[in-house]
Image 1 (cartoon, each protein chain N blue to C red):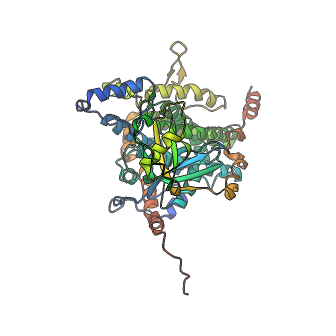
Image 2: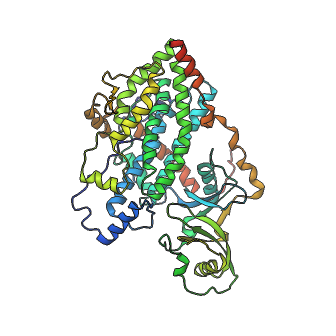
Image 3: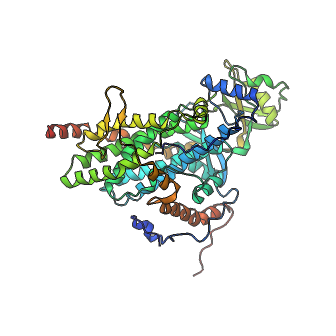
Length: 328
Length: 204
């Protein structure tokens, strides 16, 4: 799972001025030929910086994204759902490991990435700053937030950076189970009793706005995004991803008799594009900057896990230590 | 105290605000890295799959098993090598054989055993090629140049001392056997089209 709408660092006009023009041309030619860039290749500073930022945000999103769903493992209805949700949450944490590893190949140590997450310097997908009130919220996340993530990840897996693409291929393979599992959960509720249907509908109502935020604000056409697209760091615009998501999933939501809380939502048959109420981007900015319902909790839980896990790491660092039977 | 919808988080008794920022992590707080290689099937070469962080090679093996041999990722055998123990050749462009850039002569020494991994195509991962005997890393590259016939240009070579490789034991093969029984971890276990169809008919 993963959040779209990456927050890329603003680019200075001089960012490329210091780069060697010959090396830059070779680098761009390689990307144009469809070849991957590998860690030992020359790359512009800007490419390295933006990729670290993007992959790191992705990794953090996997870790933090495991929290709202993890909440529901012990309360998932039935043994099978518990097993499946546990497997899914384990997958997400594994994805974070793969992604941290890919980011590390660009020269940022894992210690520093964890520091930056906990200090709030690095971001993660905004959608995880919202709480999962009921089991149906957890089902919504498993199906639709993962679906949104897959739209993004499939686009990014065609990108130019070798280690990131390889990590994404592994991740996408596992996501297919998440998506099917999530869909199965939602179908079960939506075709169930009146109370189950109401619970599912309430979750859709709660999560629709964050879901629309998920892909990020419309990207303005700028020199910046043009360069990122040319270098295949960014593979599709936020709006393209959002449109693709709506196209694939709105009909699937509707066929279950669920409604979507946006009376303007419709597909324009002439343009082939979905029309919708513009999401509240002020709220998006407010939440991403720390003032959402769960920002504090997510980071506090992450921090306490690091702090309380310290003794384990320290213990492992002394492989020659011996176990001594307690005396009394 | 921080209030959460999750009773488990409430039981942690987290403060609403921490008094101080968390101290920065020390270097190697996350341990060293090991490169992991997986053999998907009997007779196939080991292929590089990625890294794990671990305090020692046994733990690295365990983490690599968790990370790289999980469901859908079939595994017949796995090995790990501490990243710093891999000698990496320069990279060549796609159609040039990197071995061409090594000109010396192989000593013929058999004092130490090395394992050789080849990268044949940009964007792919290193594959195990074979074993050579030589006196050191540089000599091992020359030995590999002589030993392995090539019909395709090799882009990059990794050389590892055989003794630095931690590999799963043949007699521990059954550690890979539990993978297929967990149906609930596969997409195929979540068929629901009948349910949707029945629901639609009922609504109509």
